[in-house]
Image 1 (cartoon, rainbow, N blue to C red):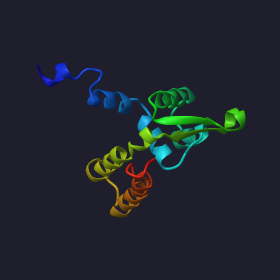
Image 2: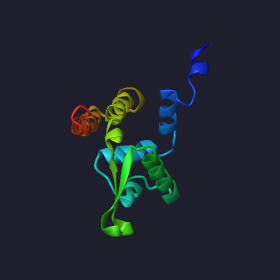
Image 3: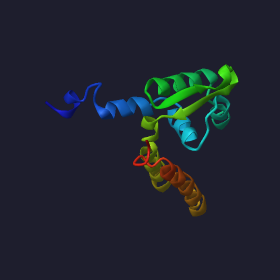
Length: 133
C-alpha cells in the first residue's frame, strides 16, 4: 500500500491542506495573530474579501476550534474573535511560511524584510506554545 492509499481524510497533510487552501484563511489568521479581533478590522485589512466570505471563514475557523467568538454586551457590533489554544499553536507554522516567503518568493528590500521578520518574530514569541495554558 502506498502513501496515497494510506492518506485519507484523517491524514494530517490533508487536514492542513483543507485549512490552508480556503481562500482568505491565511489573511484572517495573520490578522488574528497581530491583534485584530473585530469583523470590520478583518474587512479593512482585506478589502477585496466579501462580507459573506469573511463570515463563512470565521465560522469555519470557529467550527475547527481555532478561534472563539465572544459577544460583548449582547450587541452585534461588539463581537470579538480570538485564537484558541489550538489556534495559537499555528504561530510557528505561519512564522515559517512568512520567513520562506520573504527569503524565496518576494522581492523586498533588506530593511523591509527585517521589519516584517521582526513583526512576526514578536508574534512567535507572544504565542510561544510552550507557555500557552
